[in-house]
Image (cartoon, rainbow, N blue to C red; front, top):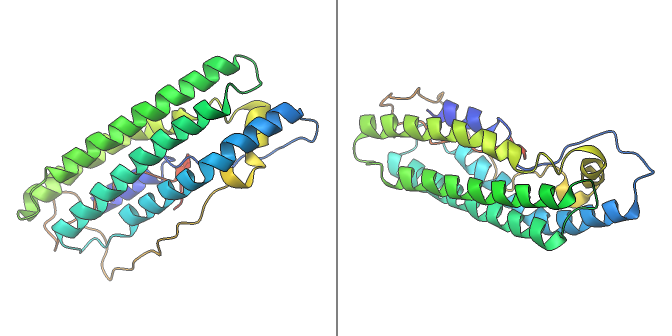
Length: 221
């Protein structure tokens, strides 16, 4: 299960704006908007990257209770970061591009919806029984399935902002660059067990998710 969760994370959930092809003739207004947003987004993008790394790096042979605690915290951190990103988009104002107000409102709506979805995953993880390895592994499979659905929401959250000259302007901002997770990856001598397995600690660390990015979203994997 660990593998499924980690795979979902690498699908692109981290909001990292790794864009290329920037031009030098972009208007100052677009660059100013990108700077305003990215400066506020930087700590949140880092927070998401760290949360994804925790999920991915939690050893597959860790105790179920440890996996549960790590995934629960990670999902809540991602939810908090998404809400903060929504506020950053709101405070930056409508971007100076065509249909800027709609682009802004759509991004805010998607980010808040994604935050709610991650909190739902947290509740699922919290409800699992870590004393029964088989049931715990089966439960993590359900979390992984839910994460796969949320991944698309995550990828779409800032997709419009990442298009055209606005996306190019954001790609030049340090705050919107792909972060390096501050949580060092853990190494495990064995490969993650598949969902439903009862390997010690069962399992699959709910590495479910979330993740690279993002983007974010590209991911920090």
